[in-house]
Amino acid sequence: MIFDTIVGISTKLGESAVSVVRISGEDSISIADKIFRGKDLKSVQSHSTHYGTIVDGDEMIDEVMVTIFLNPRSFTTEDTVEITCHGGYLIANEIVKLLLINGARLATNGEFTRRAYLNGRIDLTKAESIMDMISAKTRTQLQVATFALKGDIFSLVKDLQDDLLNIIAQIEVNIDYPEYDDAIVITKEIIKPKIEELLAKINTTIKHSSTGKIIREGIKTVIIGRPNVGKSSLLNSLLKEDKAIVTEISGTTRDLIEAELNLSGIILKLIDTAGIRETEDIVEKIGIEKTKKAIEEAALVLLVLDQSQSLTILDKELLDLTKSKPRILIGNKMDLGKIIDIQGESIIPISAKDKVGLELIENEVKKLFIDESLIDNHETILSNTRHISKLEETKKNLEDALQATLELLPVDMIEIDLKNAWHNLGEITGDIASDTLIQTLFSRFCLGK
Image (cartoon, rainbow, N blue to C red; front, side, top):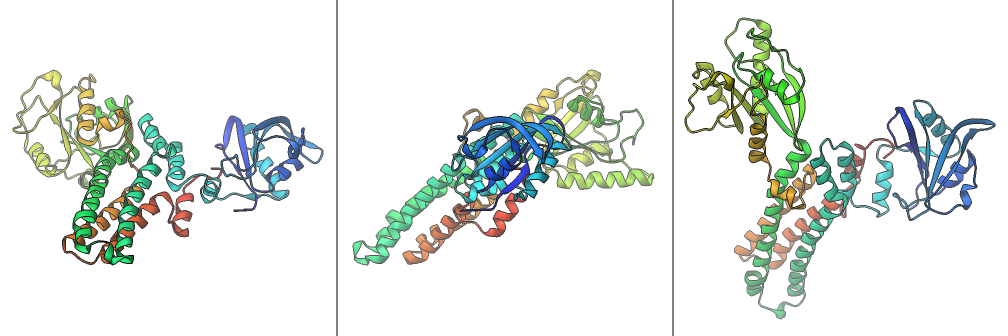
């Protein structure tokens, strides 16, 4: 596939030691050679780097190193040039301007990676993993992203597609040669067990994906409690910084305070809330309403109680308000002793002020949301919402096909559901993908990627 020549800055703009300008396309080497003073770039070997200068006529713009990648041995499979120049706000932009004047076009967001996909260098799962790696904030997020980059997700999906094709092929033989075998025997003894086996594999993958999705997206977590139980102190202790104001005055926190915490590879999207209580203060009332809304939207509730006191009416109301949510009960102020009594549910004792017991919260979060054995055993885990959604659709197709076998419907009717399942799997890897999907996915990338 032949495209025009594009250019983009592949490093973040701003003050830095170096910047990289990337050019890709049929004319990338000849265009770069027009503004490069040094070795003749049109005669050099692939994967070679050359010192020289970038010039605008007789004016030198910068000293640079130019690396050449000849097709198909490049990321895009096209001739590619990378110009490494000094960092800063101006130099890379000046080089880009010169390349545009000499025949290149400014790349759109993600266009280099899009070309790699369209030219068969990578599949969609690898393309998406590149963005996940760039945006990774924890080592665990990076580890999950590399599963796709190594081709693990692609292999997993391809194996499922191959299993489907084997079933479809069996049906095709029966349709083309009806005398080959009895249709009911084919349905009951061959197709049905194979569909059940495939469903079992997909159900396991979907189950594991809940861990992957949590690692990739984090957990929206709200810290709640009545005034002065230590919510803001807990937030500050977890973050190891004074994010929230802490005083002895009730109602100090009047609005939501948001922060992110890397909890051993899991991102907690923390929200410290206004203490819920009866008040006539208009501003505080607004904060309390925001708290109630945050509870509804949260994936996890950290309910902070004062374990040195008996449960108050407000404590009991909060326990009732959050009983249907995934939650962790935290008994703060353990240094003052334990009076609180809660039946049927464990409470984690901590001292937010002294930063004692915080690791117990971390352990409980992992127990609720993460299957650590998957990470430890380097299992292939889906984490991308699009992939999981398509796998869920595949599961529904297979369930419909299984139901059709139970009702002994004609095998060509069963085949329709199986082909729909194969189609949905193909959308994960990009074997089957609409232009709209491709445009949307790659528009999320940065300009030079």
